[in-house]
Length: 120
Image (cartoon, rainbow, N blue to C red; front, side):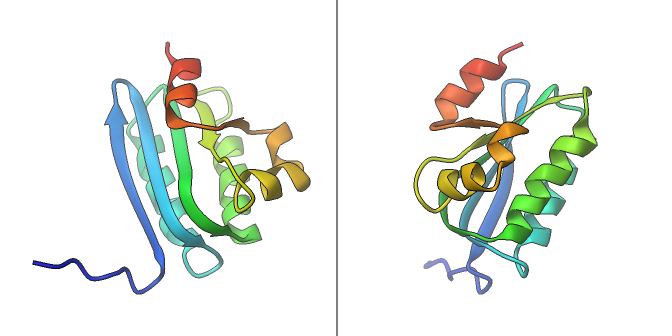
């Protein structure tokens, strides 16, 4: 059985690594697909995980709508849970740094680095 590509160009899934909720995103995150990311992060927030990581390693394009979701999630969590983003490369970490989001959200180059930093 062959899997069909996601027609939106974006896939989002939530999983757990120990106590950390990991939201893995792939493809394009723009105004059409950002709600998928937002929904997955909200689900992770509701799970009461002490830490949430958004892994954008496989994101090919990150628009301002996706960046807005990350900032809103950071603000929503406040001090209730730690929040980090895995972003490495010109499609993700560069725009996050350019617009100043790296000042409010912890960025890591790999999922392993993020998980190590968030161990409670």
